[in-house]
Each structure stands twice: as structure tokens, then as C-alpha cells.
Image (cartoon, rainbow, N blue to C red):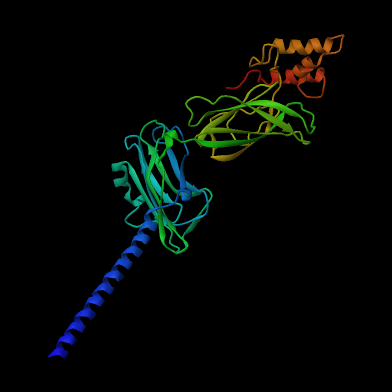
Length: 377
């Protein structure tokens, strides 16, 4: 009898120990899962991915298209396996025509695609959700195109979009996932640094390296309600007679821009092409504001046209045209019986050869003959 009780007691103790072991095992599993969930829902502050919206046309007429390119960049190298976000638009002004995933592919039945446009246009929202099919994911570092959406305007409008609820899914070293959120983007408040790297030629300039000249540059059109202020850009000459300079503008990237170039002794030219050209009898003329400026570097080669001389920087400044006051300074200098002072030479030496003579007069007269005697606006 006693032995039976001992057996029962022993069995009971074994069951209790097994129960306690199971409890501790469950607690351990819970802690492990909690750590994994934490890894999936939290991202450190230096793991952020910044989002930008590039709009191809900042002003569109009824029936015209504009494309929104969604791009992302990170502070370091981040391996992502998926992403999502909501692009919100005014459905009364725009309708979606096409959706393209640039990074990976659409997550089936989760992200919107071109086949589901009726629901998209009814809601005024594009749900973008994509995934990288490779198990290694995609290493995101520098600017990376994520998706593009083509819109058709229902009326004349300035496109404005919001990209919200943005999330990326990162693969960590231990193959766990981190959910990384990005700040919402409002295109109406977004600006980009648009850098212009310019090359130009000045009428009559005898090629000589090492010269410098100040040129005023401003931008208009595109996504601007009013043109920018002038920037004074220092251009340097090369041995080939080409002058180079650069300027940065904080403006929305996009299409339909123009550039105004105004030299210190020259007529202002309006530029609407990245590589304009002209002939000696048919000067270049901006027929449509169509410069496409991207965020970052834009190369504008103006060596196919000339910056025409004539609007001299007199004591009253430049007045926007070639007229009698400009020719008067040249004539007085040519006919002077005494040496010309340095300040006058600086004003009237339009070919930068160190003096004022008939060559300067001829260059200004050529500007008049071509009919380019007023600043282009």
C-alpha cells in the first residue's frame, strides 16, 4: 500500500515538473517572439528612407498628361524586400491613366495596377504596394525609382499630390525584418535643388583662358508662379573660348521651364532648350518654354548660340537694350585724344581685348542688324 502511494506521489511530482518546464518553455518562446516583433515594427533613427515626388509637368491643360515619379534614397545601404504607400490626388481634376512599378513588382491583390483604374479614379487614391522577388531583396542607397503614375488632366490645373502611409520592409543581417516608416510627402511644399551647369560663348570674344565675367541667371515657367530672382554667376573662360559657370535653384523639378541669361555687356537671351543652336542670319528664338529640369545636375550647353553685345553697364546701369547711349560711349572712346581710363574700358570693351576700338563698334552694330537689340523675356 505504501509503495503504491510513493508511486502516485512520484508520478504527481513528475507531472508538476513537466508542467513547470512547459511554462518556462512557453515564456521563453513568448520572449523570443516579442523580440522578433520588435524588430519588425521598430527602426532606428539612422535607418530612414526619404521619399521625393518628381512631377513632369507643373502646369497642365485639359487632356494633357503629367507623370509623377516616386523615388527614394537612404542615408546608407538598406536591403529592402517590399514597400507600400498611398498616392492621393484630386479626382475632380485628374484621372490615372497608367501605373508602373519600377522597384520590384506589384504585390498581387494588394497594390493597385493599371488593370484596377476604375476603383483608383473613383477613390482619388493609388495604393502602391510592391515586392522584390529575390530573397536577397534590393539594396537601396542612392536615389532609386520606385513607381510612376501617369495622370490625365480633366481641366487646366497645377498638379498637387500627397504620398502618405509610407513603409519599407528591410532585411536585417539575421534575416529578420524591420518595418521602416518614411515621412509623408506633400508635392506643393516640396522643393529640389536644381543645379545648372552652363557653357556659353560671348560674341566677339578672342579665346583666352583665365578670364572671368559675371552673368545674371534666372528661371521661369515650370512649377513657378513667378520667376526666380536673378543669381549672379561667375563664368570662367577656357582656351577654346567657352565660358563655364554653375548655379543652384531650390525649385520643383519638372518640365516647361526657361532660363534667362544676361551678360554684363550683353542682351538677355531666353533659353528653352538644353542645346540651342542658331546660324549667322537666323538667331535662336525660344518658341516654347520646354526645358525639362531634374533634381540634381542639369547640363545646359549654350555654345551653339552667342550672347550678343551692346547693352553696356553705364553709370545708370544696363537699360535692357542697345541704343544711342551705348554707342555714344564707344564713339567717344574711339575719338578721344587722351588715353581712356580703366573704368570706361571696362564698360565698353565688349570683346575683352583690353581696349575700345572699331571692333567693339562693329560687334554692337551687328547686334542691331540682327534685330536683337532688346532683352528677351
